[in-house]
Length: 524
Image 1 (tube, helix red, strand yellow):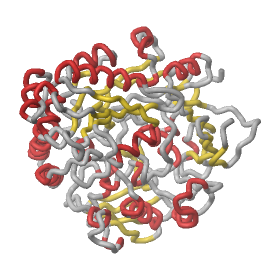
Image 2: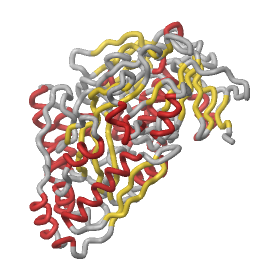
Image 3: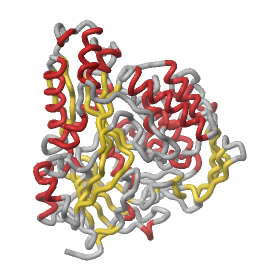
Image 4: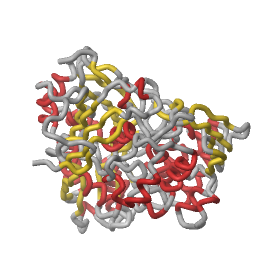
C-alpha cells in the first residue's frame, strides 16, 4: 500500500485527473535548486516559476514572474520588473527579495546545487559558490525595490533570459524553507509560485498537481488536475496508455524495444529531433582510467553504428562529438571514430597488451521505478561484448535505482557510467560548460586548466564566429584529446499521445513541455 507523504488533500474518493502523464523514474527531489534529471524538471516547471518561462511551442524564454526587463547597452546589466499581482499559492506576496533569496540559495555552497554554475554569470557568483567570498551581498543580484531586481553579469550572456526560465533560478518560498530547513517540501500546504501546487506525492504511486488559482496567469492554466506516474517499465507504460489509464507517455525509454518498428508507424507515436546526447562518463580518479590512452582506446573500440542500428533503431545519428548538430551558432569538430586497431595499439602503449593485466571494472546504468530501463541494459551488454572481443577486457554491469545511480556519480563511486545530457538552452555552453573543473554536473573527476580557460574565453567573446572557434578547441580536447567522456549518439525524441484527445504538447528543440499548456480536448 502506498503512503501519502506530501499532501494537501489525500482521500480514497479523490476526483479523477484531467490529464495523466507517465514520466519515468521516481523523482529524486522536487527542490528546484538541487534537481538534476529530466523527470524532476518536468514536474517542477509546473510548481515553480522564474523571472522568465518557456514558450510551449518554441522553448524560448518569454515573460514569467517578470513582466518586462531592460538590458544595458554593454549587455552586463539586466533590470527586471516583477508583475504587481504576484502571490504564493498560500496567499503571501511574491517580491523581489524572494527572487534574490532564491538565486543566492542556489549559489550557497550549503545547498550543494549541481547547477549552481548557471549563476556563475553573475558578478561574484562563482566566488560565492566556491567559498572565496562569504558575503552574499557582493553577488551581482539585488532588489532595488519590492518589484525590481537588478542582475549584474561578468560578461555579456546571450542566453541569460533562457537561464532565468531554468529551475535553478526559480523562485522558492523563503519563509517555508527557513522554517522547515531540508524538510521544506513536506510543508502542508506547500507554497507554489507556478501554475500548479502539490496536492500530494505518494511514493511509487503518483504525484498529483492541482491548479494554483492564485498564479498570475491562472486563467490560461488549461487543466485542473494533472497526475504524474513514476513508471519505468515500457510494457507497463504502454499497457496503461492502451487501457486509457494514461494520456501521455514521455521518452523513448518507455517504448517497448521489441515493438518499436510497429509502434513508430502509429499516428499517436511522435518522433522529433532535439538537443540531447547519449554518452559514457569515465571516472578519471580510478585507475586505469586516469590514463587518457586507456580512455581513448575504449572509445575507439566502440562500433556506434551497431548500437543505433541494432538497439536504438529510431533513426538516431552516431556521435563522435558532444554538442548536437543544429545547436545555434556552432558546428562541432569530429572526435574519435571506430578504429579497433588503433584502440589495441593505445591499450598496449598504456601497459595492457591484449588486455593483459587490465583490472575488471564496472559500468553503472540506471533502472527506473517499476522495472529496468531496457535500452540502457542492452547498450551496456553491447559495450561489454565489444570491449571483450576487441580489447580483451572484462566489464561488470551494475544496474542501479535512479537515486542510487545519481548518488554514485556524484560521489565518483563508479568506473564508467551511462550518461545523457539534454540541452538546458540552445547554445553550446549548456553541453561544454558542465565539464569545467568545478561544475557540479561534471561527475568525472576530470579537471583541466586549459579546458577551463577555453570555456571562460569563449563565454567572454562577443563575436559569435570567434566564440565558436574557441568552443571547438575546447570540445576537441574533451572528446578527442583527453576523452573523459565518449559520445555515442544523438537522441531522437519519442512520446506518445493521441492528438485528437490531447492538446498543448509541441515538438521543440529542448523537449520541454510546460504543464499549464496541456489539456484534453474531449472526455473519455
